[in-house]
Length: 201
Image (tube, rainbow, N blue to C red; front, side, top):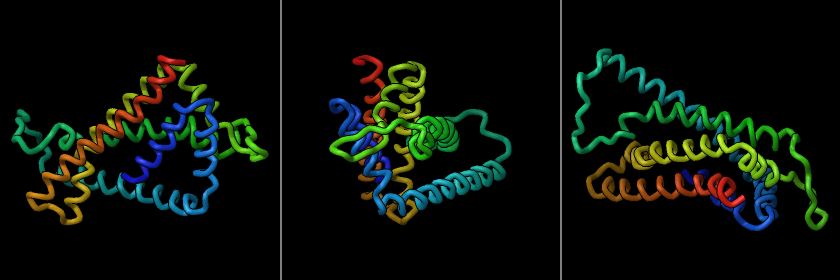
């Protein structure tokens, strides 16, 4: 959850000027020793998250192989909470597309370089902005991915704290409120970026 906020902060620098701020931020994230240590830990955590979610979903379905005739709301569960696995699956598809288009190209040197004050780095701004400007359908996919991520986080945020034992009535109510705010900030923040290039560029 912290990673998403850091990633969003860096990405919002795409909206500043000619791309210099974003290129410096992207270069820092790619070369910083702390990030290099955290990156594989995040990747492993993400894989565990997918496997654990899959196991839980399969276990739940095996307990009730035949679904309910109708799904009525009980006032507690939300649409997102009942569809977390589907949301996660669609987000995973978006993530693969995202990694192929950005991470892979930057990581393995397919991006042209640029120099600022004798510091050479990848021109990540040209790569990202070029994709958003040239392919409107990718903007739609990116926005859809951001919205689905927001729904996923609206439940996942407070559920993570519940898993850690913060499940009393006072804290759950507070965490649910923070979760909605966090989800809206993340979904809106990531959506603004393709909209900026789609409309203003």
